[in-house]
Length: 102
Image 1 (cartoon, rainbow, N blue to C red):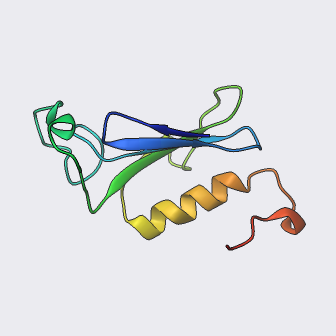
Image 2: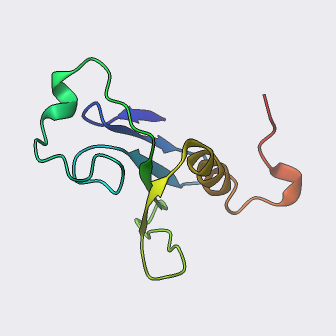
Protein backbone atom coordinates (compact mmCIF):
# COMPACT_ATOMS: atom_id res chain seq x y z
CA UNK A 1 0.00 0.00 0.00
CA UNK A 2 1.15 3.55 -0.75
CA UNK A 3 0.25 6.56 1.41
CA UNK A 4 1.16 10.23 0.89
CA UNK A 5 1.95 12.35 3.95
CA UNK A 6 1.32 16.11 3.77
CA UNK A 7 3.40 16.70 0.59
CA UNK A 8 6.55 15.90 2.56
CA UNK A 9 6.81 12.15 2.58
CA UNK A 10 5.20 8.76 2.17
CA UNK A 11 4.72 5.34 3.72
CA UNK A 12 4.92 1.95 2.05
CA UNK A 13 3.35 -1.17 3.58
CA UNK A 14 4.55 -4.61 2.55
CA UNK A 15 3.05 -8.12 2.59
CA UNK A 16 5.54 -9.14 5.32
CA UNK A 17 3.66 -6.84 7.74
CA UNK A 18 6.27 -4.04 7.80
CA UNK A 19 5.68 -0.38 6.96
CA UNK A 20 8.39 2.12 5.97
CA UNK A 21 8.07 5.86 6.49
CA UNK A 22 10.17 8.32 4.45
CA UNK A 23 9.84 12.00 5.45
CA UNK A 24 11.62 15.20 4.37
CA UNK A 25 9.68 18.08 5.85
CA UNK A 26 10.19 20.75 8.49
CA UNK A 27 11.25 19.16 11.76
CA UNK A 28 12.33 15.89 10.12
CA UNK A 29 15.98 14.87 10.22
CA UNK A 30 16.77 16.19 6.74
CA UNK A 31 17.93 19.35 5.00
CA UNK A 32 14.62 21.07 5.97
CA UNK A 33 14.92 20.33 9.70
CA UNK A 34 15.29 24.01 10.63
CA UNK A 35 12.40 25.29 8.49
CA UNK A 36 10.03 26.82 11.04
CA UNK A 37 6.90 26.93 8.85
CA UNK A 38 5.41 23.44 9.14
CA UNK A 39 2.86 24.39 6.44
CA UNK A 40 5.61 25.17 3.88
CA UNK A 41 5.38 21.81 2.06
CA UNK A 42 1.65 22.30 1.44
CA UNK A 43 2.21 25.75 -0.08
CA UNK A 44 4.11 24.45 -3.12
CA UNK A 45 3.26 21.87 -5.76
CA UNK A 46 6.57 20.03 -5.29
CA UNK A 47 8.57 19.86 -2.04
CA UNK A 48 12.05 18.46 -2.59
CA UNK A 49 15.01 17.51 -0.41
CA UNK A 50 18.46 16.00 -0.88
CA UNK A 51 18.10 14.00 2.36
CA UNK A 52 15.28 12.32 4.28
CA UNK A 53 14.56 10.51 7.52
CA UNK A 54 13.30 6.93 7.62
CA UNK A 55 11.58 4.69 10.13
CA UNK A 56 9.82 1.33 10.00
CA UNK A 57 7.45 -0.70 12.16
CA UNK A 58 5.89 -4.14 11.97
CA UNK A 59 2.24 -5.21 12.12
CA UNK A 60 2.40 -5.15 15.93
CA UNK A 61 3.74 -1.56 15.91
CA UNK A 62 7.20 -2.69 17.05
CA UNK A 63 9.68 -0.21 15.55
CA UNK A 64 12.87 -1.13 13.71
CA UNK A 65 15.90 -0.29 15.85
CA UNK A 66 18.96 1.13 14.08
CA UNK A 67 21.28 -0.44 16.65
CA UNK A 68 22.00 2.71 18.63
CA UNK A 69 18.63 2.87 20.36
CA UNK A 70 17.20 5.14 17.67
CA UNK A 71 14.01 4.21 15.87
CA UNK A 72 14.40 6.98 13.27
CA UNK A 73 17.42 7.59 11.06
CA UNK A 74 17.97 10.92 9.36
CA UNK A 75 20.08 12.66 6.78
CA UNK A 76 19.84 9.70 4.39
CA UNK A 77 20.53 10.01 0.67
CA UNK A 78 18.14 8.59 -1.93
CA UNK A 79 20.37 5.51 -2.37
CA UNK A 80 20.46 4.91 1.40
CA UNK A 81 16.66 5.26 1.53
CA UNK A 82 16.32 2.72 -1.29
CA UNK A 83 18.61 0.26 0.52
CA UNK A 84 16.61 0.67 3.73
CA UNK A 85 13.29 0.13 1.92
CA UNK A 86 14.66 -3.04 0.29
CA UNK A 87 15.97 -4.35 3.62
CA UNK A 88 12.59 -3.81 5.34
CA UNK A 89 10.63 -5.23 2.40
CA UNK A 90 12.70 -8.42 2.65
CA UNK A 91 12.59 -8.82 6.47
CA UNK A 92 11.56 -12.33 7.41
CA UNK A 93 12.07 -13.71 3.93
CA UNK A 94 14.67 -16.33 3.11
CA UNK A 95 17.26 -15.55 0.45
CA UNK A 96 15.15 -17.49 -2.06
CA UNK A 97 12.36 -14.96 -1.62
CA UNK A 98 14.27 -11.70 -1.96
CA UNK A 99 12.43 -9.20 -4.08
CA UNK A 100 13.70 -9.27 -7.61
CA UNK A 101 14.79 -6.27 -9.65
CA UNK A 102 12.30 -4.97 -12.22
